[in-house]
Amino acid sequence: MNKVNEHQEECLNILQEECAEVIQAASKIKRFGLVGKPVNTTLTNKESLEMELGDVLALVDLVKASNLGITTEGIEKARLNKMQRLSKYMHTWEQYTAK
Image (cartoon, rainbow, N blue to C red):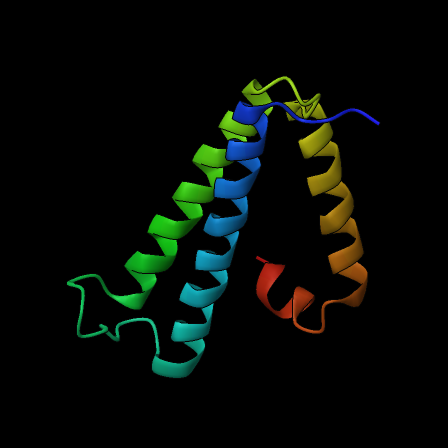
């Protein structure tokens, strides 16, 4: 079993935290709408989600650079596979993806 080094573990820990923050931001949009603003911030819920998604993307870059073997190609392959699965099982796929 290959253990992760200290830097890799830190990258993975922060990635987990950022993913949890995306979940929280998405939940706030569902509960309070896109333009709602929590009392402790000047950001709208939409802006908070954008910020958290950006944070996740930054951590994806760090994870790719941390020598865990995670590659842009592997991520893109997984992304395309997910889009294919969503096209079959997501109830609103055709309604919102047809242009």
